[in-house]
View 1 (cartoon, rainbow, N blue to C red):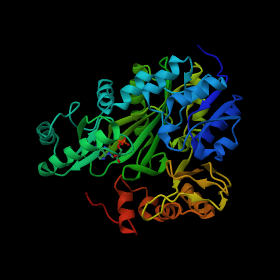
View 2: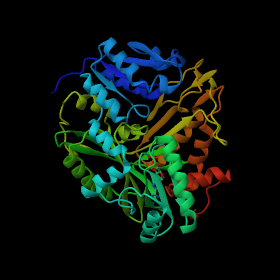
View 3: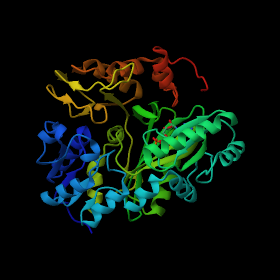
Length: 458
Ligand code: ADP
């Protein structure tokens, strides 16, 4: 049923709550902010049309408190909920509850969230739709003996991964048969503790892949388009720090080929709203690892190269509209880079919450800052440490790097330590400038405190 959304409740905080609020405002749709008691002075509350306190600081009592969020939506007369990323964004039970109350969930169906949240089910679904996978077990691996048989077939090193995994947790590498028992035991224990499910599977551990992901939008009626790829190889502990669009190692032909496979698969699935398919890319081959059924932190790099407001599109599609354009209408212009600035020590990565005494964001041509910081704001210790996303766009990758360098130098966040100096080191590095990096590169840069040096197999 196509119709305008009347009021959107934004079930999130920080920069992404602001990002969604801005899209709503430009569309003329009132929005409702929710916040914990710790976030009463947060920017997403200060700028809100309307706001509701949903609980005490701990996320489980506020931003993960489905009943409080639903009550806030009902009390304020919101007819839609945007979950942002993290928190309840990939919680199928929450999406079910939202829809059961006659409220529109701005995202995919609960069934698709559930399917992709189970990585074993996601891989099986993608394989049946013709999407290439990382070699590994056929589904769950019940015990070490079975893991050994799989590893003998695909070859070491292997990775034991939690079916319910996320945020890089519940993943352990085994270099040989001797190490497999330990990896299996630890991955299982981590999975049980972090996700409440000890189901694990085994994958070939690729030694030097890039993380390349494809952004899609779909209308649930078979209309599916992709907006190209992002390279998110620069990671620490499997967490992304810097992303670019496009991938420096991918040709337009390879992008088109991957895009055709993925869009055909999602059309058959009847997928709706935004999604990202994550692949490892090595030796010219793509291998699917997982799908995220939500908006990603790094979505702005895609917005800049494609000239599309992805949140606006999400809202439009959730209201029941069709895409209204086809793949050939989507163009790619220039290059974009995003640095995730966190409130962490740039060397130890310990969190550095506290008072921001002065704040000056960079600006100028081709510069975008998505942040909820301001001078006088106290970064609370309770949540994710992301405090700003600095995104630049330029005609070429070299120009984008130059623009990022000068923007990082302009950025002043005073009072707390941040990862700004680490980003300056990354963009000054020769290997990064040459586009020659894989998923292990940044760990080496951090470990050596200097240049990342030559390739080594971990
Ligand atoms: P999560 O959901 O926890 O983020 P993913 O499956 O998306 O887990 O993997 C996160 C990161 O871990 C990937 O971007 C990649 O760097 C690394 N990784 C995952 N699977 C493999 C693999 N088979 N071989 C090598 N690295 C991997």
